[in-house]
Image 1 (cartoon, rainbow, N blue to C red):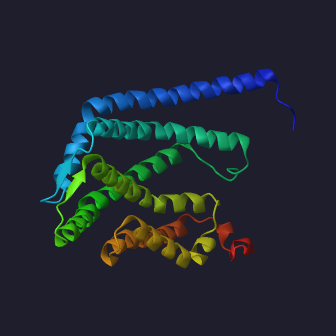
Image 2 (image 1 turned 120 degrees about the horizontal axis):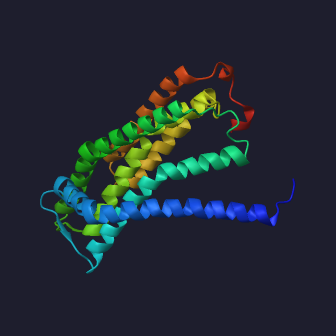
Image 3 (image 1 turned 90 degrees about the vertical axis):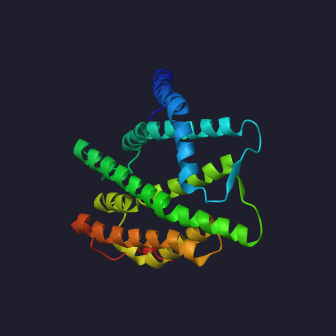
Length: 255
């Protein structure tokens, strides 16, 4: 491997600085707009729709509301910069490694992947916001009420919890797209995924138990959609599977 000259190193550092500066600008601009126009609306909407009747939100320290707005706005900024960050990561892997040797991406494919990703993420948000979280939060409130405890939630903790859960559902609903991407580009064999089907089921229920209270119903509401999406991903990936992939799973994958 040839040694890099000082000039080449300097050019790489300058290019990295420019790219990092662009990311910072995107995050800063969206953060400022979100802080001024969007954060308060998001917080009020979550409180109105998801706070169980009878529960109350409180401030635990004077700057709690302000810090929460900053966090919410920063999330919007990061999400806005994410497509550009993914593009940079893809270019780096393509140009400097052989991981993406079999990957063929055209502009049309990129548009399709991005559109499908946005749609699936919104479906995940809708499921979490409209079905899962109302039942989940109501269960937690009733558990506290049954013990004779008044439900006073920290504003920041309540909003952070809701945002975290919504992010989890949005990411989980990307499973079909991720599976199609990996299988269609020959990065993962479909037979290998099928071979470890039961292992994935266990992982899904572990995730459900980790992010929900010790209640079978709420755990199932997290795990079962993952299982359904997983099976749907396998079914739909069969359509996009490359013919050369019809083989037994590699021994390297076996336990």
